[in-house]
Length: 329
Image 1 (tube, one colour):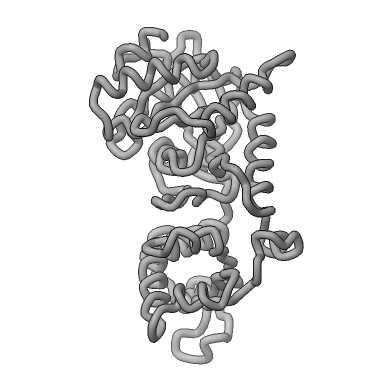
Image 2 (cartoon, one colour; image 1 turned 90 degrees about the vertical axis):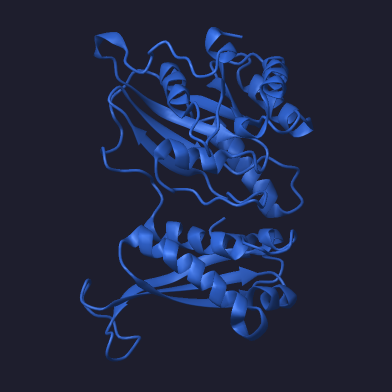
């Protein structure tokens, strides 16, 4: 391992290269489900652009977060967790990850310090090794996440095991929750990027649309406290975001900025029993979901909104190509 890997917290000042060189490129964060990719994306960007949950396989799209620095612009692509698929949706998410890996400059392979390297990690490593065989593939940085959850001895052993997994360009231990080594990671990633001009404006933090971000915040709220089998069955579609007359007809649009902002969205599940769980007794659970999501949406839009949520059943949508298409997969 290099000196950076053996002595956490040190850096050689690569963040300020001599000669005014500017680097820019795409960095995909990959790993098994629930290894901290979305939490890391948010920590690097400095704002919440990807939802997080203790439930595995929360991320369903390649979500782009943009980090603009004086010497570089890093376009992060937070990918779904690679897993053994049991549905058509799972197959499509794995395909999305592989497609993304073929289009980026750097891969950040996330390996949590509190979990031993397993078959899923080896599967991803084999894919990455194959991508780099016979042609120039992406540079690969091992990102050992969640170092705040283990002691130094456990971390040292884990770093050695990671080093043996494949030929990494760099290995960086970090804690996204504590903010440890985040700047070091950005310096390391910058070194791996190609020279090039800035690709996005200074103030742009994500490529996600407003409606996509709203739907994800609603889904994040709905994931809290539900049973293990239900999270994968939840999908959210924002039907409309509209200004309405606060004193008149709740469905009559008015000029932007002059009325009450209403967000109307639908939560889809696969079975009637799941619909009952989401709604709860007397609608109590849906009210909790709405309250939790509304506070996040208020912060995102910078104003108070009225959130109108409906719950519908789309039977076995994870296995139905037509319904997957309608739901944006």
